[in-house]
Image 1 (cartoon, rainbow, N blue to C red):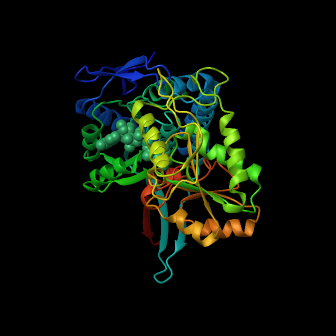
Image 2 (cartoon, protein in one colour):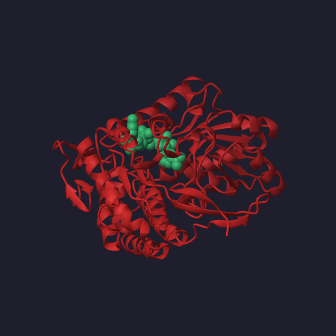
Image 3 (cartoon, rainbow, N blue to C red):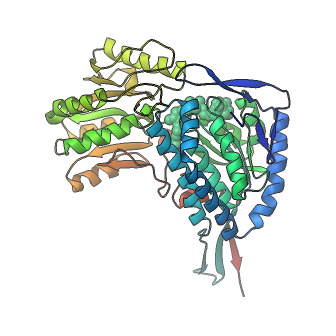
Amino acid sequence: MDHTDLYINGAWREGAAGQRFDVINPADETVLASVASAEIADADLALDAAEAAMADWAARTPRARAEVLRKAWELMTARLPDFARLITLENGKAGTDAMGEATYAAEFFRWFAEEAVRADGMITHAPASGARIIVQHKPAGLAVLVTPWNYPAAMGTRKIAPALAAGCGVIIKPAGETPLTMLALMPLLAEAGVPPGLVNVLPTTQSGPLVDHMLHDPRVRVVSFTGSTGVGRKLLRGAADQVLKPAMELGGNAPLIVFEDADIDVAVEGAMLAKMRNLGEACTAANRFYVHEDVAEVFTERFTAAMAALKMGNGIENDVDVGPLVNADTRDKVAYFVSDAVEKGAELRLGGAVPNGPGFFYPPTVLARVPENADCLRDEIFGPVAAIQTFTEQDDVIARANDTEYGLVAYVFTENMKRGLQVCERLEYGMVGLNRGLVSDPAAPFGGVKQSGLGREGGHEGMLEFMETQYISASW
Ligand code: NAD
């Protein structure tokens, strides 16, 4: 691996204490790289560098910032296979998933190059006083970005690109399982024209104290986190002391509803995407399938056949659809959810057994007639396991779909668009896929309600997360 040190002020450095940690290839459990671990002193250096770089960057014209981002998109697009390979090596996901992620990750640079010049404000007359109301958006300040392992490139670029478009400097702390992709992106950003210090990367084994330290530095104004709801709550508490602007992309427990009037082939195709993209290790993964009794058997048969056709193996090989899960804990948790559901009475239609190692593999698995008390209906499965239940009444399935503290994404399949849109409106979710198993799009506002998060990434909203609104009351 070329880049395994901290990236601070445009240069590679050891951590202050000289500590390193191993990154493991989940397909064969070998050590891929030994990566420098950042300490508090390194965070201070990164904050100093980001502060200095931001002063000039924020003063550049929006077009000048946009052109750097556009160049980053071009450079990354030219190197997608290299990024995909690295994503597969450290995360495990199959080559097609990794190419999908790399492409999606690069698109945030293009999208926010286009958005950088569209921080629209407004001017109007105050209704009573007649003064002018001028509203404008300004860069919020330094941003601390914390990202998960399931999308080592895209969860980073989805934050870096809008922050840079807005004019902010950033310190990014990637997940310890998958820091290599974000480190590999840094020379590309430098080549695109990102000045030294504007983007700093701090892998660490000390996530809690390191991030908390940065959240208490007065120069930091934004914390943007993607990860579990539990860690999100901790960061919100840490952010409270300085009243930081939080953007929180947290966990999900997505329902996928197939009505009796759905096109079953469309529903199966959508369900495969919603469940198996990223082998289920996605906050958007369909976690609870609700299929109308009248079509439950035909849907389950066709869906199970599609799952059975997937080839599991080392994701670096060309014909593999399903790679390993990221680590042993994730694999063991998935195995627990399946055995718990089966013990409580679920029918195992496919998969369900942990294969011999090495590698953290778990096969595509289908559970039918899952009982209401199964743990997999309450928590994110985060693996290639579909938990299918049935329903007969529309009001009942909407109530069951909403019966969770999460509210990230839901999926609905019906050929009746009037019904579909009515159901979408009643679902307490930030996003709904209607006859589609994929909602993620750089041009759309991604995010959840309830305990799935605060704020939106992508779309027009994404850049505003890194900006403060200023209102000037003026007379002339
Ligand atoms: P995680 O919450 O364990 O870790 C996420 C990041 O937070 C990692 O970088 C980790 O090192 C860091 N971290 C852990 N403890 C910390 C602490 N005390 N202080 C500061 N940072 C800390 O999540 P994960 O296991 O890496 O990722 C899976 C989770 O992410 C799932 O819940 C999934 O739903 C969620 N996720 C959400 C979205 C979304 O957009 N809503 C996208 C992808 C993943």
